[in-house]
Image (tube, rainbow, N blue to C red; front, side):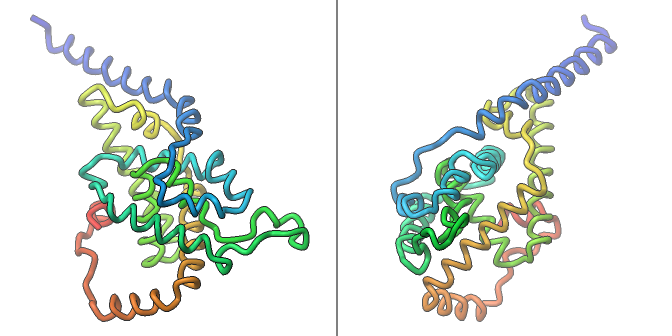
Length: 245
């Protein structure tokens, strides 16, 4: 029969191995961040009308990596329940907006070095669309937070929920000894405050364009919502409140 000391040593070894696993997969996170997922067809209009530089960033840049990482961290079905109709409808509307000249005027030589950046900043939207459904849901959460909070507050909320989620998953790894590989990579990967600030900023930029293009519908929706006076929820804990929303 194993002694208490042996059991303690085994537990310590197991925890060390779990920690080492996080270190060993850290480099693999960069590979995860580069993976391209075929977006739902409803989002095709977004990618087709995204400026060249934004398209490159969305498909192969830092924001694509952030989208992949967030999607993996929050892919648990209890955290992000399936919303296929919402995702489909949002894609159709986003593509409709992207196809308008108001949202995406064409860049030309007169714009100089900025020609490749002209048009709607749908960078994080396309990054999410090419990273899987959970990433799209994280983009929608970014839009929700951007509607409610100013950039510094929204960024702090993102930092808190990402940090908390990683802590939860690390505890699960230590207790159970395994995590889905993609989730493990996301836990080990680094999503900085600066990355989350940019994630929030791009969502805000997209909302500004969408509001301008759909100004009539947005005005009507805002009038209805403002008259409801219904709080999202009353949970005092930031993480629980945001996730429950």
